[in-house]
Every structure is written in C-alpha cells, then in structure tokens.
Amino acid sequence: MDRSLNERERDTKRIVMAGSFLPVAAEPDLSGLVVSNITSDTVSLSWRTGEKAFDHFIVEVRESALPTQATGRTLPAGVRSTVLTGLRGDTRYQIKLYATFSGSNTAALMTLVTTEPKPKLGPIVVSETRPNSLTLSWSTLSGHFDGFAARVTDREQLYDVVELRLSGAERNVTVTGLMDSAVYDIVFYGLSRGRQTPAVSFNTSTASLPKVENLTVSDITPYGFRVSWLADSSEGFSHFQVKVSDSGQLLEPQEFIMPGNQTVLDVLGLITGIGFEVSVTGVSGNGLQSRPITTVAVTGTALCFSTARHSVTSKVSLPKLGSFNFLLSSKMFFISNK
Image (cartoon, rainbow, N blue to C red):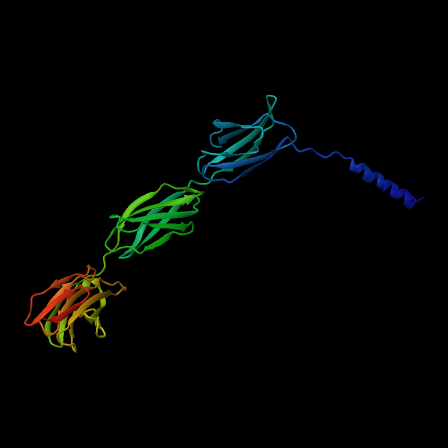
C-alpha cells in the first residue's frame, strides 16, 4: 500500500536534519606548502596551519643530486612564509617543511623545485662603426634577463656620458651623437630580477670623417677666381658642395655641386675689390660629409687667406696695398680706403 504524501515529507525532513549535523573535516595542522618566485638563486615558500599552536617551523633544503647534504633553518611560530637564498642556478632541490610542538615534529610537507639558470651574457661585439655612431650586438648564454644597460664614455671625457637602458628582448643597439675618430670606453651589463650581472668592459673607436684638404684660390681676376682642392679617391666622394659668399654678406651666396671626380671650379661673375669666403665640403657615397674647409680671397688682388671655420673671430691687419688697407676676420673680410 502506498504511503501517504505526509509520511514521505516527514521522512525527507528527517534526512535533511540528520545531514545538518555531519562533522566537517578539520584542516590538517600543517598544509598548503607553495613554492613561488623562483629565480636562479632564490625560492619563496608559504604554508598554512590549522588551529594548533606550534613552537616553531623547520625548513630543510638539499640538492636532489646530493641527498645526504642538507641545510636547515628554524623559523618562529608566527611565520607563514620565507625566502630561501644562496641557491645554485639550474639546480633541482628537495624542500621539506616541519612544525614542532612540545619537542615533536609533525609529518613533513615536501616539494621539489628547480632554480632558473643563472643569467649569463654571451659575446658583445661592435658590429658597425661610423664617424658619429657605433652599433653594439650581443647574445645571452643562459638565464632570464629583464633588460640590459650600457654606459658609453669618450676616453678624453670631453663630452657627456651616454647612458642606455634596453629591454630584455633587444640584442643590438646603435649609439648615436658620438664624435668622429674618438676612442670610447663601454661598460655593458644585464639586468635580471632587479640585479646586475657582472659588467663587461671594452673600448672601441668611431670612424674618421672623409677629408677634403688643401683648398686654394688661384687665377684671381677682378671678376672671379679658380678654386681647387685635394680629395683622396679612396674616400669615395660622390660630390662636393662649394659655397661662395661675400664676406660682408651683402650679396646672395652662390652654391655649386661638383662631381666627385672633379676638384677644380672656376667662379666667375663676381664684383671686383670684395672679399669672398669660399668653403668646400665633400659628401661620400654613403652620405657622410667631410668637415668644411674655408678660405677667403679678394677679387682684383692676389690676396688669398685660409681660415678655420670653428676658430674664434679675430681681426688681423694686413699690409697696405696701394691706397687700400685690408682687414681680415673669420666672420668678415672687407676693404677700407684710407
């Protein structure tokens, strides 16, 4: 005979109430050993405990390859984490954790962990040098790198130190803004987990600028002159830039582009009795420019005077020529009638 609906409901309530009083399993006294933040020489440990109050904890560490050699440390009862330091890179370790209570040890929690390889730089080379820059290339042999750093200093310490910070993914960098034909001392190191790897020191030199030399002015007439210069064919000049301007800057400058195999230019159509500044710059096939060389000549006279573009402005009185007195400056060349 089927039971009534009320009887079935009463049985269900008795089962639910009985389940409400089932005991909940207590957390073990020592549990949850977790390894984190693994580096080449450190490992972080953390764990949990139940309600039991322990006297202290013991951490035991040994290399898996050397099971009979262990190091241990004792930690206060209130500690729930620690950092193991002084480990060897790329090494497998067995770690055990005990808790002590009234002179007895709990069952050990054990884990295995392998440290990261120690970060180690590979060869660092200067892969390219130019007059105003150099390129560094490098590799890594092992370990994790967050980044790299380099310090570039000219040997004579005449210019600012160049400091570089590079990401861990980079393997080359071009250092710009350097001086030509200069020796630079370079210190390079890696950055890993907030620490520096051993630095590598070396030196290198920037390349020389192509040279244009011996700028002369000849065949001076009242209305022009011939300009010539020397340039080594090995420099690979594609062209030369010649600029002619009156020293008083009263007229529009004349600019000429000469082929790389030509080193003579006849400048015509000038005004007589005026000082003209002539500068020549060579441009190589890869775009490098020589330092400009400069001279000054006066039309209608045999006067020609070479000047240095970067010298401090100075005036030099020249001997009288007829009824004229010449006055020379690196900024201006003019004639005054005495």
